[in-house]
Image (cartoon, rainbow over all chains, first blue to last red; front, top):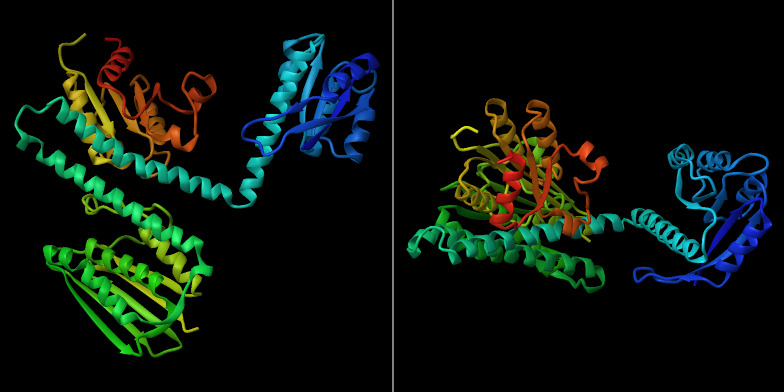
Length: 373
Length: 131
């Protein structure tokens, strides 16, 4: 149970004790809140008194009468706004003047309650204020903890998953309604596109699995001497059928000891991502060069392609989640937009660095540097 | 009303969705021009004035649709604009154009969820074109 402190500012003692009676045993709960809220009330008979309370103890909600003997409600509200107190203010007023309402809303009143009010009306208003406060504070907390980023990630992810479903569903409907006639051949292109989109979705799911592996992270990491030349070879073999179709040839060059203390699965993910990109974004008849060099202080890995390349602007973006370079040259290439962000995160977990250099139409080089542990 | 078929510009970076929407709108008896990006749509709008435009929300930028609407509205104040997106459900990013406030900054006339049925779309287009 959490307690919200409610400051009641009204010059009529009857109203103050009435509100006290209505709220003292009242609790608010919502399915999305971890705990219930109850209310502890603090009294103030004047605006001056209210300000004293606000400056000396925690207050979450202010129920504020506008007509007060000294400074009036609007002035108190103005003070609250200027001091930037984290409170929600609800104005209580007997004259529902539009002018006052506008003025009060502009300086931050959360809502209004006309006087006289019934216990139900008061409770309903308190419900709303509580929810509002909770969400406001939750949002702030999430931002502070970086959960906002997580939330954004999930939003984009669901968008990425939904687009292929929409596309495939759309094609199926067109076929169901026989929009292009009765001949099956006339739907070939739609069937191809549907299969491509499904494949893209499968890749996305595979990348997500990589991501979860990475997040479950360090404790599951099995560090042992890994032969990176073998892992690179394995990744190249996996891409071989596709490379042959596109007439792309791949070459591996190793200098120095190819062993590195690392987790084999993670190294596989890194090589798979880099090499599959080098083939996918290549040109007909292009080449991919994979160089491993373990001679300096770090283990250096370089993957160079002679592909479509990209602009400096694009280079700056590609390590971010779900970023895909969209232009006429990449139109037919599927990808989740996660591979490089996963790769970068992984490399950084080894205290390594990853860089990209690229020239449009000439090709791209990814250079990794992993420290020997 | 002229006898010529009305021209509708559709911008969406999902080639499949674009193809499907194009087929749907052509089926309803309109002429269609398509753009696969915000940039391409902007280029078309420089020389062509469509009778109505349908923009996807997330293209190069996540608010490409809004930007396009804004620019299109400045050039052709009387061209109706529909924003189509699959965004609300997953981003919790809710807004609707029935609220004065939102309508002021989102320069579009209608906001549609993707996956709309052909008859619904037809009705909305006709309404906006006063057909």
